[in-house]
Length: 254
Image 1: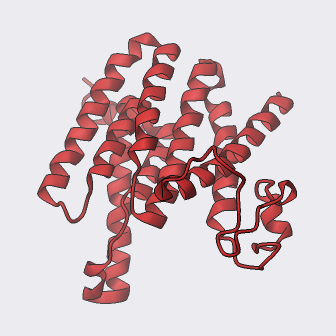
Image 2: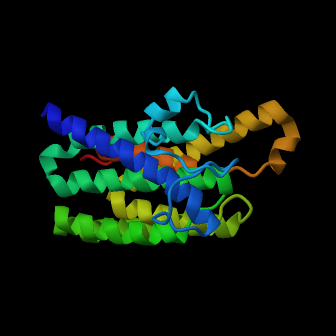
């Protein structure tokens, strides 16, 4: 059990590093599979010893070995978060089988990429969402074929709900958020409901904090909504079904 826990954590760390590569290259129309990683400032190729997740960043104190330019802490934080997320997914879904664990880990991997691209470039790439949707359908079918219908329905409702919001308030939400909600529904099923509620609540609180700090100027700031949806998705992955059961039992039992 300890060996399996270590291996799944290492896999998360490695895929966290790869998520950073995808998030950096895709918005620049570069292939995430082509060429070695390089420093954005000086162009120096990153040596293998400097490409170890989290550890290399700590050893280099967050700077390029050649030009000493700063390396954003967001990348090692993503690696560490995905490593811990993969471990939590395995501990939570191990009894449900390998497909359930793979579904959870794939969802976290997708959310990591989306968070990085939306924070840095204000985009949620279709080239990430498309394969994510296919992977979700395949993994749900492998996990439990009977769940495929409910997950598709949840995706349609989640995407439809955010489509209505985006049409009513186009400045506050883009189509990328709509498509992300659809994909989240494919992964989460009914748990997408608390995921969206948490995402909206977190976004609203952040908006209030901005207004409190910057006043009316805050209304002119573009705030990416994808990371808030991702935050809700992570919480719903581990507690969403329990939240839904509590709500149904509290308000609809009997």
